[in-house]
Length: 279
Image 1 (cartoon, one colour):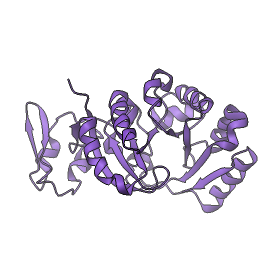
Image 2 (tube, one colour; image 1 turned 180 degrees about the vertical axis):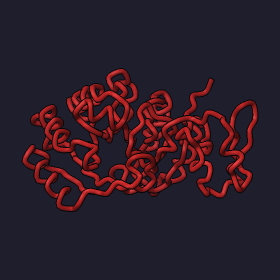
Image 3 (cartoon, rainbow, N blue to C red; image 1 turned 30 degrees about the vertical axis):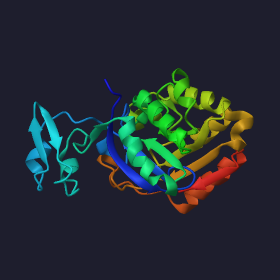
């Protein structure tokens, strides 16, 4: 059987998913559920309940054999299906092979530096990533993974061999804070951080700041303590929480102030980070 993964969407040109202009591919499905997720509809695979079929104003959705079928040609991208879904899923996905995605990406090759695959959590589909990245490498395109860090990278050396680097989201450092925020376990994230740093495979460390929900001071100190002398070599991106797309208890939460973010930059500098980006 051909290797396939559920593709949520492809952004042909992005300037925020790694160095230079890149094609960003978002896969469906995640193994945690971040309270602040800006794309909550990517967290789960469709369960086929059919609520979205009844609600679609364009008639782009139907049901067959217990599954929801999406007619891309009829879809007007109004997002009604996403708004009515109670399962944090989207019916607007396509199970595609690495060759099919590469066929799309290759058309952008003259205008991009590489490809970044995100999610959901793209590391749920390591075989798909390995095949896709191998195809991209063969034509000179760079390859990056955007991951929540909860899946063991040490078990996927073959994938790392065709990946330029990992953009690692470190959502919290304290186990209780991480669990409350994501429903997951932070221990694998810390192991992956150490493993990837030792191999020089971290493209960027990402920390989202949400007052009252995340622990950015502990996260920065914890990362610096684990990285040691490698701290200055790691790019750090500190991101203001913004409520766009967020559902649930953080749907109306405020963004941190510029003063708060500036204070975190100063802390990061004192801890040894040298390449810091605010977003």
